[in-house]
Amino acid sequence: MPSIPKKMVYRRLPTIGASIGYLLLLAAVFLLFLGRSIEALRPAFILDVAPDFYTHVSNFSISCMLCMAIGYQWLMAGTTMRPVAWLAAAIVAANFIYEYFIPFINTPDPLDAIYGLVGTLLGISVLWAIDRHGLVPNPKLQG
Image 1 (cartoon, rainbow, N blue to C red):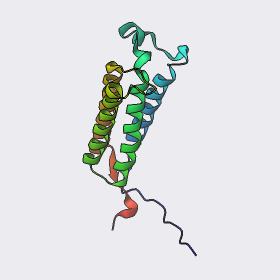
Image 2 (tube, rainbow, N blue to C red; image 1 turned 90 degrees about the vertical axis):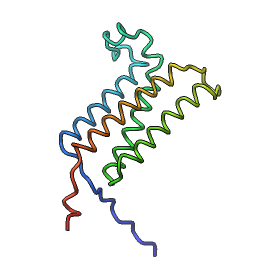
Image 3 (spheres, rainbow, N blue to C red; image 1 turned 180 degrees about the horizontal axis):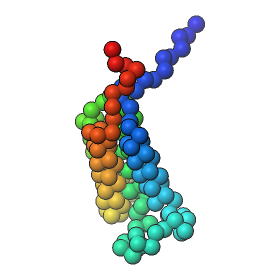
Image 4 (cartoon, helix red, strand yellow; image 1 turned 180 degrees about the vertical axis):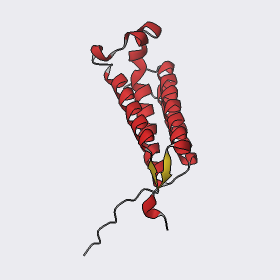
């Protein structure tokens, strides 16, 4: 008879502020992504500053959400920022490789890679702040 896997227990837990901030930023980035197809979600101040923002926002949003979603889980599992930084570097490298060298189902656009870089930098910056100030040891694991 196969054994039942044990329930995952996080080594560190987020504070209320870190959880709320993380979820709000994730929601904001997702709303920016949805703005590609729903014009009502496009803030005028963004279009005033960068009229072509919504042609590149998918790289920004996907890179940021990917970095934050995976990195947040890793940090709660107890890893250090080093593997999270390597994840961010891999996301940035994938953006640049795809935009510069892989024309498959894609029009090469260096600006897309820059947007992906900025999204990843936002994600890793937030994760760094959460790692430093927003995670506490799990009391269930304290001896």
